[in-house]
Image (cartoon, rainbow, N blue to C red):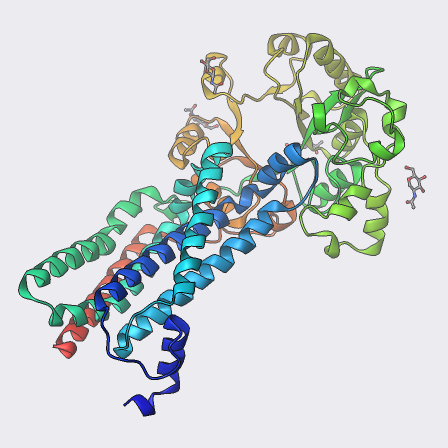
Length: 505
Ligand SMILES: *[C@@H]1O[C@H](CO)[C@@H](O)[C@H](O)[C@H]1NC(C)=O
Ligand SMILES: *[C@@H]1O[C@H](CO)[C@@H](O)[C@H](O)[C@H]1NC(C)=O
Ligand SMILES: *[C@@H]1O[C@H](CO)[C@@H](O)[C@H](O)[C@H]1NC(C)=O
Ligand SMILES: *[C@@H]1O[C@H](CO)[C@@H](O)[C@H](O)[C@H]1NC(C)=O
């Protein structure tokens, strides 16, 4: 047989163990099996980790921002990590496939030392990633169970498929082992199968996109600093573009200049102006750590658009036309007044954060709003610090809370929180109580779909241009249809397994 190895056999053995010639008989069968288990475990780990990375993709900006505030350099670190981890995952999964091929062909399973070393390096890099999230980005973990509420039905179907394929290997070793071990294999296999086959009974109640009655209305869109993927954030161009995405509110950040003009800028303290303007070039010798270090005139002399074309924070600049690029290149920092005028013109609401507000800042901002003649019901007031004063000075504003307890204490019914803070069950409950629920920052279609099914009133988003075009959630299904599907798939899988078992016997 050794001279007539098929190409497939040679390749598989070659890639797995680096024996390109005929092989001697196996001495270390046990070791081979241990390494096979190791490869399997690492592959599963890599797949789980890749899943987590893809789910966290919605919040990539958050992580890039964390690194930026340390290194003062804007790089799309998240993308770099995604690429590294996809290489690791692809490698592990390919290795596992070759291992299974070796088993299927009845070949030896000795893993080459280079593969062993690479696997250890892979595990280390993944462990570093897990540690990294746990230490500096712990608030990201709840996103994983949340994502399962939409992916679980697919994962279950995938698991049934994988189980059906693997059963052939299990039966193979079952028929060859001793009695005692047979019992163990049978118990483990039947338990795992039962869990995988029956978990839809649990999934039923946890997935809002398996709907029993009506699909809720599509959540409205709030433009997060405008449309930051289509134009430099917090510029008039950005807000104009978000109008063409059909947003119903502008989300922004307000700070006050030295001469008490409220203007729009997100970054503050150490990072103030550094990321989104050319302040270093224009005022090399001026201190600019606080908004009140610069006058409105000085702020106006800064360019707030070139950075967007240079750093391309969302890999979206290539989609802009030459004309749009020219407009982007010409953006300056807008004042709150300019934004209010635009909002008034287009009947769009405004919601904003104020950083470290004192009563004087709040007063100036409220006065600016009252002096513009925007309809007060278009102002969604968020900063909690001076709420009582604002309620007296401007009773027409709509009060939004970022704390549920506080909202109920004050008899409010508008809530604005991070999307992972409320479970979908909680969102439904609040909506039943007629509470308006806005969730930030929702950029990916799967997440938007999930929150849509759960009944969110609106979401703050970077990607209004993507979410605008969705007419339905990407996945939603009647509960009874899902029941039929999973039961049929389960039955098909059991029948195939029985067939395989009898065949191998
Ligand atoms: C840039 O903006 C200024 C005013 O903000 C305007 O006068 C000028 O025409 C603009 N230039 C271009 C190329 O759009
Ligand atoms: C503004 O929009 C709201 C809904 O968002 C609508 O009820 C209201 O009639 C609009 N007002 C004007 C003047 O168009
Ligand atoms: C929300 O408000 C309540 C009472 O006002 C307070 O006890 C609680 O700590 C607040 N929660 C958060 C997350 O700030
Ligand atoms: C919510 O509002 C609807 C109509 O606006 C009303 O019929 C219902 O009673 C309200 N529910 C609660 C809990 O206030």
